Image 1: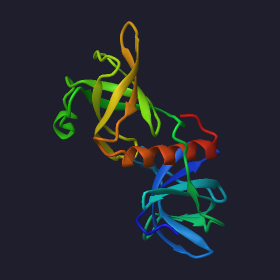
Image 2 (image 1 turned 90 degrees about the vertical axis):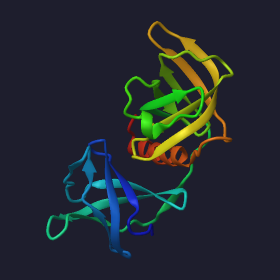
Image 3 (image 1 turned 120 degrees about the vertical axis):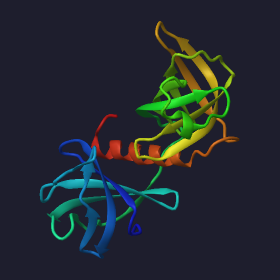
Image 4 (image 1 turned 90 degrees about the horizontal axis):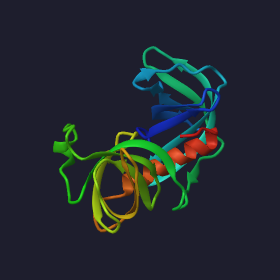
Length: 213
């Protein structure tokens, strides 16, 4: 079982929504206890017998399980009880699989200070439109050319921050109001752990729930 405190993402495949929670305990072969799920900062009540898909990170790997809602308590703590999963499996993802996104990204020709610039609306911001383990496609109003190095800093939807991910522009499409770039990561600068973990988790959630990002 995943350790207590593991952040868990739950998918409600009936209503096609993703929820955030945290593992708080379990009774082997009987139930899992997780914090009351939230979506957009708001608590969510899940009905009894609702099937859910759960995913969590541990030791750099993504682990997943299927379960159903048993019941939910409000006092003395807000806890959701899930049926103990029959199995917990490791999630894998191919290098080429892409995840559609809309992530605000600071993109610069040299290393940037994301902590200082993240609130600066005049900084060189763009939007990552999809992510893979090998690169990304993004749009921004600033001009780069094929072969140029770029440094990307951004906050992922799961709250983790990736800073100064280095990549090289591999293709360019010019449109009237934006430039579209295909960027290939370079492992000499910036840690890709957070990106890889997020892609694995989100892609598995989408495939299990039938959702489109």
